[in-house]
Length: 438
Image (cartoon, rainbow, N blue to C red):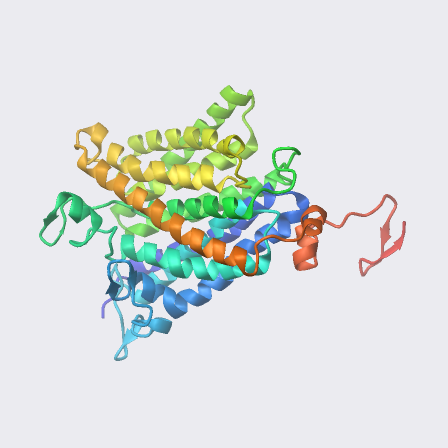
């Protein structure tokens, strides 16, 4: 077969960029926690890479894109172990952009990994690493893969003639007349992870001292470097979701930049008005909020409406991160305020600002209704399934480390390591880093 090597090269690069996002997230989250928790926080991202990378090969791809089961998930045994997904009768299976489907598998596994890793930010300082790894596998299997199938694999939240959108506004030529738009994962990734983070934060409970003692980020340069790597990798996330090196990819790239820049400014302005200071943490968080919001909309807006979408996302998320203090849930690193809020806004924002379909641009209300419907269903599905998984783990093996481990430092308790060795004044180390005098 005569493959399009240009598209193949772009998609392989996009997959690599998205994979880089998870180590970037580890830096971003690692800098936001206290020094005694940084290794555990970073290990939660790396642990998600290990677990999800394995099960995606075994049944994740098949559950996401295999033969449909009731519009909810793909048959996990249809292409178990990628059987039939890569090669059939010695011939490579074609992917979405005239390249081998192996490249689509590579691209999609990185989405699954980063989505699971995002949830970990709500659980900082207090979660057993073993429980997290079990949760990562269970949640990816029971929540992420079905959600990916429902939205991108022809299931209930897609443009299928048997889907929700078709039920609301009917079909045309065998597909929903008003097709849902989720370009790169507003529902599948961000609403999904944000709701899961909220549910787990409620199940696990607050950190000791939450709301009573300062829990400041221990390394803001880590946070800013992590945000920079996320921004860089996000071009693979969004522009790669065009599945080709074409005009749509270029538009997604420009829209992603526009929304992210505007969101950073929107967050900083909100901070300045509310607190009197524009902070580096706010800049980094605003970047992520903008990236999240434009994810579902990157191919459906123009650069000017992307600026509007991003600015609103930055302001909304800056305000939303304070809700945990008002309502008393401990979302440690603001996964709910950033990913759920900005992801929800970006998903419904398509129905307001989308070219030709947006309500505010004269497109009527239909697209907005469909976008709102898929966002609300994603919230309910993710919330209910995460609640079941979270409670089962809570009642069986438990989520929290001991009180002593939480106070003394989860890094040492869970991993037998510390990120920073604290030495008394005058300490001298020999070449083997052993203390010889103090």
